[in-house]
Image (cartoon, rainbow, N blue to C red; front, side, top):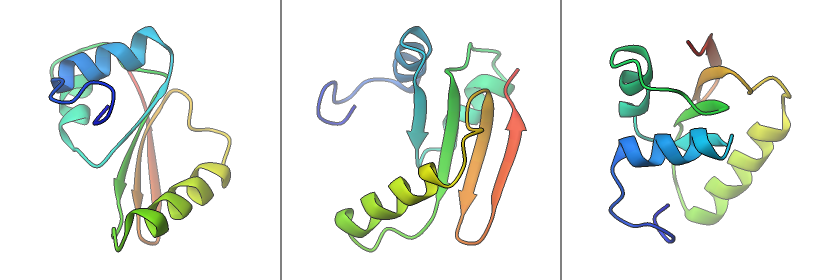
Length: 91
């Protein structure tokens, strides 16, 4: 989104992900609040990354490896931490 629609609100980003049935990858905790507390429609799944970001290249490789490590992201709000993944079904 930073490249295609910079400055988009979280609500707009969530709406676009939902409309296009896409996983939403983020470092922003606000998306969980929008879905669980404000009742906005969720996308195919939301993955909140809480991992170190030493460089863009290393981060990209880590995110790709994490995404490839499981096939059950759809329909889940997932929090990826350094040594754990917590998942909760989206409403």
